[in-house]
Length: 345
Image 1 (cartoon, one colour):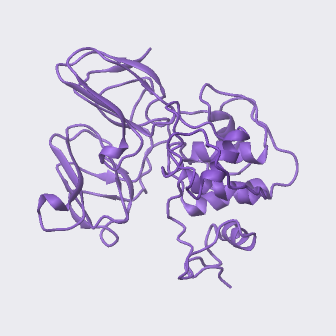
Image 2: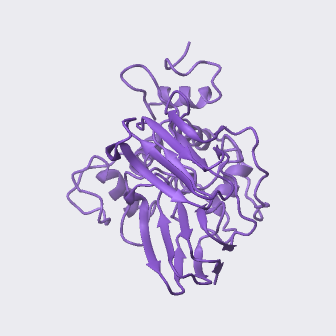
């Protein structure tokens, strides 16, 4: 018997989802569905993993220590407890970003810290110890999971299920495994230029163009009147780009962009030297401090997402001089136009 109307017993994630429901770790919706592909934000994931552990958090008027966490918000007690226990540290700017989608790297760190699972310190990136341990112990549903990829409900319950039900000793990785980008996934969902209905012609999700295209214009739409009010976000570029099409979008329009694909594997040959385009941090490029070779009109921005909306911009600059920028490992992406070559310092 299916535990949810949209999750059959043959579903790949069924064991984890069934466990989550029976353990009251994550419930479904009033209509009887589970919505396995719905994104999970940082506050939601923190609540899930703490309640899976059996932690009981109390309401308090004490500050959580994060500037963007309202003490009256439903998630404030969970964030406060996690901060006090050293489970989360937040961002360098003093924010927790509770409503931002949680990615694999962040989720693994929260889960491992909350459940008290120790890992060897390996690699130069903070997430390597958690990622390599998870891969070695089959915690992830797929070994191709990317640290910058947003997590959905089915992946969340899978990770928590694997960590909570593990039997025996944990294997510890002794070194970082090969991080050479995988070959292009030719079976990934893709489409070419045109105007599409989201949910019918194409599905919501994150897509990228893997090659430069002169005069590539694309827009996320909330209608098809052709008026400016119908544009949720848009972009005109000559370089490879990335866009996250939201399930609430009515349509998506692309012209001169070539092929859009959900193959988000690396497009760079070096993760420490790159030119113009939109890049995934941790996949295409490494976090760190970079200096560019110059440009008469250089624009760059650090990104927390790929919706194309202003809220995704962590910081940006338009300059005619050489520039230096520190890309954080918490950034989802980095965009550069007219800046020449960026090289890690």
